[in-house]
Length: 517
Image (cartoon, rainbow, N blue to C red; front, side, top):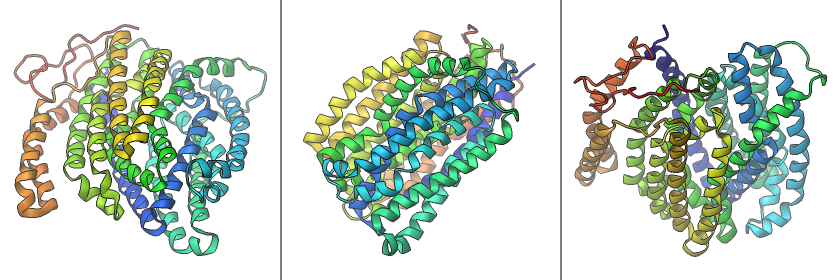
């Protein structure tokens, strides 16, 4: 009989690997931003950020949601033992997105001067000259990555996204920062970094995916699968557009109303706050194909079990990260250079919102992988209709701090809305529950931080926070490890150590789990 601990161990192993790679990629990403700010200046950092977001927007548009559609279809086909049909979906999807992304890259390159005028960034065309050709590479890499993830290659995808690419960007930024500026100019050097890293990442993912796909050739004899894929993917496409607005348009809006320097300051705060999403990113790398597979098999009990357990794991990691960002905001931003500490309030507000986002769990993936992608799209569209005017007004009148407040309100609101949609459709509770010890540990750690900061400095104060948090959470973490090593059958409710369901923080409470299709 399949046991609870066995599946959770598998998820924990993949998530731990993703988290390990993220602990490398996050510092590397940080160091890369610092190097760009130090070697190229705040203006070039802001211009480079604008270019990256423009390409990201177009890459999502050109993918048409087919990347998430492939993830769902590949996982379902594997669950049904139909591996021979994989290529009927993959090759037409690649051909379609290349037909869209090639002209889009040319249009982006040709509009460089026009964009430079609207974003107050005179060097933007020079960056685009090198970065725009990476657009088709990014969209194909996205399809390769999601297809590989669905086929069980989670670790290869995580390696590419969270280790290989950050190492490449970090290394190339140093090389071009010291040597490229004198050879081809600072803007061109930054664009070259983006293009070279995209080429290598695509080559790696394509090679690994090829080794897992069937060896037979695909023909045009059966066009039905691509029609089925497009029919499933179009709500995911609009959902991806909404998510794009969710994560990328804020910096572009701020750049439209303010200077590239303000974009650089805001980006430093936004990227710092994003570290709180680290556990969510790690878990999301490991679980989407499981949600799709369990839903295909009609086993919603496993969907709920995985969702509840992972939400709690994520919260125990995200809470101390959020506290550190809020407590040490000026010191963290000071690493980027003079003037960046101006975004300390923005960092604190965004950190709180990201904590709410993590506490809601993998709600977007649950809706997308269980056939409720239309609900996901409609909810995100509604949030976009509210969020875009809100962020635009905040950026125009209150600058980067106003933008951060609007983005935080939007982020928290959408997360709660998605969690409510999961409950309404699937009757699954995904909020992080039984985390009282984590909250008490955060309060105790914060007290230690302020008590020690004046005596031991920022490093000693952070060590005091870690001590206070660890004192109150170690028992709950030990219990979680016990669940991972257990042989509990799926149909057995897990109770607290005292014998009452969910009586202690960190306990896994499965009573009332639904077993519906």
